[in-house]
Amino acid sequence: MPGPPPKTTAKTWTGLAVLVLPLLLITIDGTVLIMALPEISADMSPSGTQQLWMIDTYSLVLAGLLVAMSSVGERFGRRRNLLVGAVLFALASVLGALATEPWMLIAARALLGVGGAIMMPSTLSLARNMFLDRQERRYAMAVWAAMASVGGAAGPVVGGWIIETFSWQAAFLMNIPVMLLLLVLGPLLLPESRNPDLHRIDIPSVALSFVGLIGVVYSIKTLTGGKDVGLGLTALAVGLLAITLFVRRQLRLPTPLLDVRLFTVRYFRGAVITDLLAILAMAGALLALTQHLQLVLGLSPLRTSFWLMPQAVLAAGAAFVGAALVKRHPPAHVVTGGLLTTATGFGLTVFLTPASPPLLVAAVLGLVSLGAGMALALSNDIIMSSVRPERAGQAAATSETAYEVGTTLGTAVLGGLLVSWYTRAASARTDALGLPADLLDRVSSTLAEALIVAGEIGGGTGSLVLAAAKEAFTEAAVVTGVAGAGVMVVAAVWALVTLRGVSANLDLAEEHERHERQLH
Image 1 (cartoon, rainbow, N blue to C red):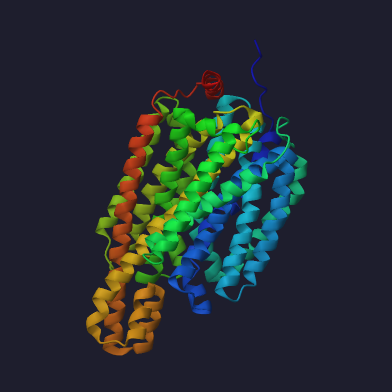
Image 2: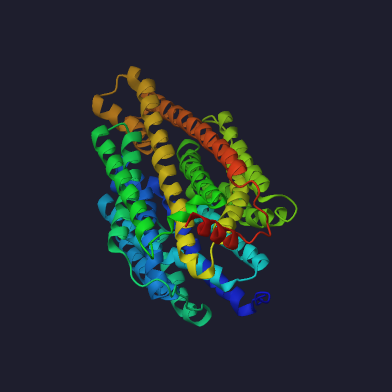
């Protein structure tokens, strides 16, 4: 009988602190530009579609490359991958700060996504390999999940402070000192690890996974926008075909890029899809509510960040609350309770009006962060505990792909719902004002553009345009919040069913290997 796993040292916990630094920035960068959209709109005049691309190109590229980059890290070394990604992330940050046109900013965000995809699987797989004791690993996973939640929640807070104090360009430049610190401390504190059984990287699998994810997400973006339906359906068909071919190829390969048989295990499948649905709803709500604070209520970026601070604090503590509760309650019940708490937060958006106090928005986002933080910490622990240390990279890539696909889908689906509902509502409210067609188009494109038009017109008509646009956006935000609540209820039911029977002390990796032997 093997002895108990070795306990960790102070150096190991310090190494975990170093690991969460890039994770924090990767997740912050997913949402930091939400606060910068008004300033970017004033500088570059991007269209509504370009604004969405500025936000979700990063997550789209990140999601498309995570599986491939995790395989690269398993072969060439996860620590090495982490450091290479840090260099690329820093260079992309410089390019983003220097952007002067919408396409330049979108390109910089894409390059940031490549750097993030190289780093992110290493942060989770290295943590998995550094903590072999199940109880210690659960708290390590809670730290990792807490920082991921804090990054997503703190992105607008950090962005608000930086933009108010400096400019939107500083939201890119803040990455550079952290990446330099990682390059110095990483080699000193982080152990190198790789998968000795992985002999080569299957390039066709890399291409199929990227094309599949990009095709499906792009199709959703296109179809939710209501334009280019033919292009959207074509992208969907190509994406689904690529994913089908990818899965078939993985089942035939002796060393697959992604072990798709993991999805035959109910609790693994349940935890991954729970992650995806929870992040999808959170991303869409954050996009709507931060713009409500800035553009409808007229708060400055700094004051907006003040009202977003409670959600960042709750996101940080929620993961540890979940880790404590699971000692007394089944994981399925804790995850389900967290998701229903999040749904309750979304439900509060029905009380939102153009005159609602910022406290209401803070309460919505606080409940969302508390519930989702609890659920995501435990589902992430279930995913990573399902595999042996040498296969941690594939589990990490799966978990993080769900996170990034959820972020991208949230921006695409719920963000697309927000934009399209606003467009219809704004058009209906301003048609009777007798504005020229070009001004009507501008007013109904985005709320930021409507505010500019109202200022240009001035007088009573300008005030009417302003009021109509704010009412239209608030209506769209309420619809988006209700949709988010519906997604979370679905996720709660899914988690309750699929995670039933998972024990906090169960050796999930051994259970999966028994299941896999039965399949063969």
